[in-house]
Image (cartoon, rainbow, N blue to C red):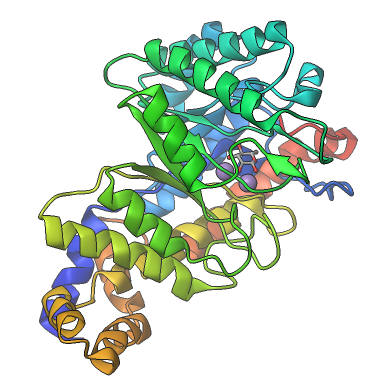
Length: 396
Ligand code: RM4
Ligand code: MN
Ligand code: MN
């Protein structure tokens, strides 16, 4: 690899951090059930402990995303426990994910529920999430809504939109100045006729109504098949409305598979749009790179490490695109050249440079091997197996 390219890989890795989700270490499944893993984490402490392993071997995952009901069962009072876990395990709380979908009262929606009492309850949960984020020094509060309806004629779509606007405006009013509200969208599931925040346009509209600290969160699994996600990313960047990602891969629906396992070129193209924007605007895009995967069958810590390694590779490859040359090719409508610049960068093997970068940071060249040889998995399997064999359903 040319020295210039090696330098570009190093530079890209220096600035690249990715947040892993606490729920990625818990037993998760499909709506048909779960296959339990003996080593799965069940408590917030175990999730911190597992996340710390991923950070120890990769060096690029200093934060762990928390889901309020699963990780902060005492609400704002959980902050003390979280802070103690941060100190103990050396990873910090990252985004705080509000949970407006698990409680029975949300059967017909949260912010979109026709019952004002339920909307109030959802708002209170959001305010609590903001307070939790404040006490654990987290910047981002992320909101995903399961709201929607299953049959035509059963919901007033316009009224629900207005209720969403009201609740998000009020939520935004409660934010602290350093915080952001990230609003996720999803076109289907669990609602199968209409979803209240179905796409990036609706999410962006709601962000704009809510206020300046609200930004769009793009979960790569939350699109219809074959949708051009990098175009959405480019538009959001251009509007300064892109807040962050929930990365995962999919083939059919919101499959939550390992990043890059199905279509690594798509993730590369997303990273490319971001890096191209940064080059063109000579500014750094303020984006939270987060993972949202369900590690259903593979070992959970291993799958997290695999994900992080893949994210680094694809980000580094995207950094190899020659932006000046690309801009020229695009201006001249040189189609072959423009397309080749992306394809060539994507085809470069950056793994050795990544290993060298890790070594330069005192990290293991091969994080997976380092983890597998550490004895950690054997230890937690022994500690958690009996308990996990009895567990049934919850992510927490
Ligand atoms: C949703 C969405 C949210 C996540 C939940 C668990 O599909 O992706 O981000 O919090 O799953
Ligand atoms: Mn998500
Ligand atoms: Mn999802």
